[in-house]
Image 1 (cartoon, one colour):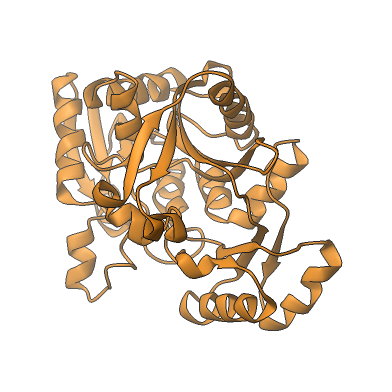
Image 2 (cartoon, rainbow, N blue to C red; image 1 turned 180 degrees about the horizontal axis):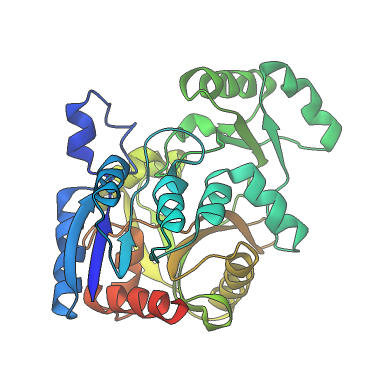
Amino acid sequence: MKVGMTYDLKDEYIQEGYGMEEIAELDRIDTVEGIESALTKLGFNVDRIGRFESLQKRLSKGDRWDIVFNIAEGIKGTCRESHVPFLLELHNIPYTFSDSLTLAIALNKAITKRIVRDSGVPTASFFEVKDIDDINSINDIGLSFPMFVKPVSEGSGKGISALSKIESEDELKKACKNILENFKQPALVETYLPGREFTVGLLGTGKKTKVIGVMEVNFLSDQAKAETYSYLTKSNYKEMVEYSLMEGDIAEACEEVSIKAWNVLNCRDAGRIDLRLSSEGIPHFIEINPLAGLNPSDSDLPILARLAGISFEQLIESIMKSAMERM
């Protein structure tokens, strides 16, 4: 079976003048090599395609694949993760992971929270600040301090720091203004959840979805605790974070919330959901990553899989099996 690979390499965008935080969600070459090696060992004939523009050129030449292993995050726009899947859909070429609609929705945290909230999944109360004057309406919906502020459409902890936890109206205005000006997108303001933080790994689609593990994110220093799971923390996770696999009632509660959210959003094949406990100890949905990082060593999903006794090759095999069943 011929498997194409679509991806966005950090190095290519650095050469084009992008900054490190701008390309935080994109992949290193060892991620591509790791996935390619696993697919080859599983008996697939792998063809590297690359980014959206490369896919366009290959398709115009008449190149086709039995399936595409897609990890392309895109670089511009709020629908950037949907660009490659949409192009593949136009050419009737199957691919791994969620479809273009789900990826577009999931990247917008406010829209995602509205959907999961309406389905009965616990999530913190929130408000979207599209203009600095919108802050005047926050009191009308009952949000109280402390709050948490982050960009509405970013991943990899971008735009999150120790300044994201908000204790006053002045801090709220500064944080929202920073996001509006520097990220050119709305700010998501949420009621702060004070409890423990978890990330949940999932495999499969629909009724075949299963949780492979619930991993607690333990912050090792006061700085890490203040930063929470930010861009800085994720970039320096070996020094700032310790991961542990959870069992028991908390893990079961996290699994239940995660599977419901996963299926409500029509996610496929594999991904992660981030949760945090409320002051009452109830797991609340934070955000979902249906196109989770797959660096064999450093990405959360492979780390979680290893803790659960699943090798990187087995993880890739499970993703391919799920996608091929849908075909």
